[in-house]
Length: 169
Image 1: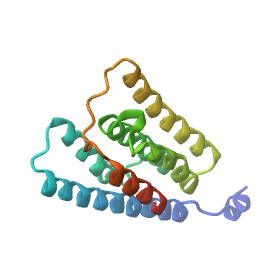
Image 2: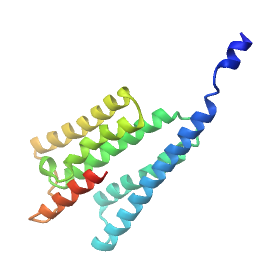
Image 3: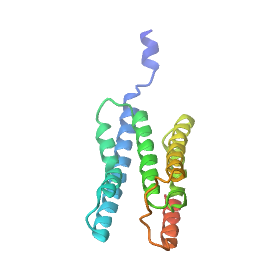
Image 4: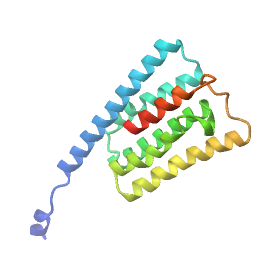
């Protein structure tokens, strides 16, 4: 039995590499989020409560990176990252026109990101999270509870920038 155990590869180095990669990716996301948050504040001014929630969502990957130093499995952290991304996109969609938001296309990126991070089960869970965000936005729109859009009257440049950014992503 001891000989059999010696033949098994030690998964610890691989898991440590996965954790380091997860931390690097989450910190890069948090860095982009911080730059976006600072740019938003510089262009718009002091955020209101709803905007603070969105800005916190942009910085949430830093918290996930910190959780990577605990005993929480990388797979669970990846799923939390995808769920947070779905929630953030859904939240932003709700404030930028609902089902006509230029950001709605970003929900399709959640399963695509899952495909890079994990296998078929991760993609299925990410798809479910993105679909849930879409259903919540649709429900808010159907009940008239969607907040007024924060976009300008003619948001076509925003649409173009959003789609271009999604393609680059």
